[in-house]
Amino acid sequence: MLYNLIVYVVYFALLPIYRLKVKGAEKIPEGAAVVCGNHTARVDAVVLFLALFLNGNRPAIIGKSELFRNPIARWFFTYMGAFPVDRGKADLMAIKKALTVLKQGQKLIIFPEGTRVKEGMSGEAKSGAAMMAVRTGSPVLPVYITPGRKAFRGCTVTFGDPFYLPKPEKGEHDPYKKGADQIMEKIWEIGKSRGEATPRG
Image (cartoon, rainbow, N blue to C red; front, side, top):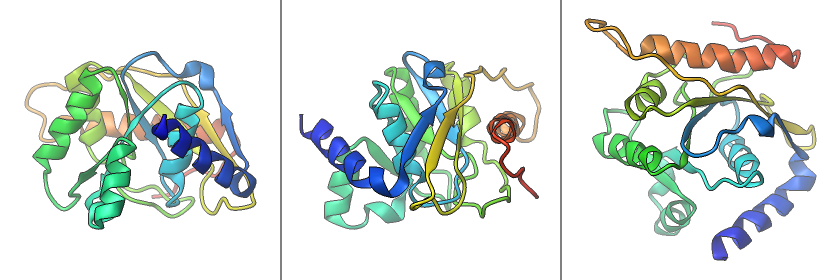
């Protein structure tokens, strides 16, 4: 009850500012999925969370550990289904939590580039999202979010077709890097279909 109340308060508070629109909601699969999007603004995680919630989902989110330092913020984010990851190292606790979330049939929001990237640019895709999808057998749900500043300009969250990543071949130096790159390609394909700027390296 409190969870739903908080989400709807946030939604109606942000609606006149960001004018959130959701496209491709019918492509959201039932059950677990690794939900991956482009990340150019702080509000991206919030609008993606809302887009999933408004379509009957209660997703979990991986957030940078700095957001959880304040006790009140830590309680709030944890209650809303977020958990921290230390981006400076291989955070085994965060990985274990993420895998558990997916195995329990929940959706997990993760930004493959690992941090915010300037509009029109493309950061290096990290292997975490691909690894989680392959190890749990979960589909990847690519999503493209209106890049850059969104306040009073409108924000659209567009879901693409879910897909499965193949298991990596043995002996690869970074076995999940190819899958990570494929995820970002799918995300940018959605952006291209919307006529948005393509990423530059």
